[in-house]
Length: 404
Figure 1 (cartoon, rainbow, N blue to C red):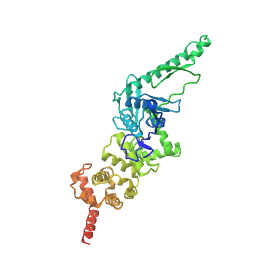
Figure 2: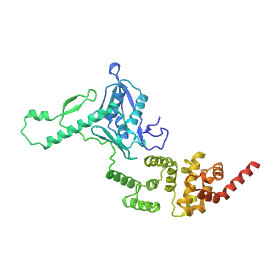
Figure 3: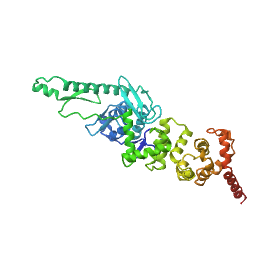
Figure 4: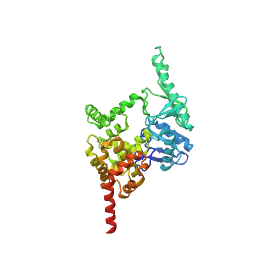
């Protein structure tokens, strides 16, 4: 079993970018004192951008058992009772569906805003609204937020208040801090003079300023430095003609600078499709615009051949292959009409690299031009006429093979 699992998405998609560690559990004790310890709860919760106390409490509610999480005890997460890893992993999948995945795009990019209720904002698709669940954990999260807010307010008032003469007894009492027992949810006191640890931010900041900072950080990581990053961005913007750095073509072209593997390209393309709400043809058009450099049209057929391994992923059956051909029709007939004279070379390059099969190409060429839903009948007819010599060659070769 892999050490990491997908957070939502297709469980079998190895290139999916959102990952979390597999739960590691162990059973301790015996009889009435038996309990299940989640060894890596902190790591799992960090991957989910959620407080580990919430994840632990969810298990407690679901199993009807007492649960507790203590950061001071090496991030120890405990649920009373004996539960195997698979059972707990299945419960965690339910937790993802209720509290982690965006109901709009299905990606784990939501930020919670806790007040009297819980509102969520998605950094990927922009979805915002109330959290759509009435699970008991909602009440616990709201209560936890109020307690932390009240504690912060009391601490601030204590610092801002007037200094008064205190007895030794008063100072001792002041040093006591409230500690919430996660099992009984009762407040007890514990003597301590240590400063409270800073709270960990488990959510993604979706403000425009934060998005700009993250975007710049990504650009700097992919390029050698800030000046080079800006120069590359200027070059990409010049190629695409877009001045918007959030344009999906710009984003994907910049991503290509990392020289990613084919599976990584597919994963990023899928993320952009989900976050921007693209249909299948729009996704393929985005891929083609991002893969190809149109500054020298003579090189376009060779570029198609160069990116054959990626394109094969999107022409794996006749249906998807027809979508790819339809996008090429629109590209050479409408978007970049100067490429029309080279469309036969493009089709030949895709055939030579086994992206498009002989049967698929012949079936497309013999189909009515009006069936090309991305282009007009006139454009589709013109594209077919330009490709006719190559198609005739394919048919002749097929006849010669059948005769032999």
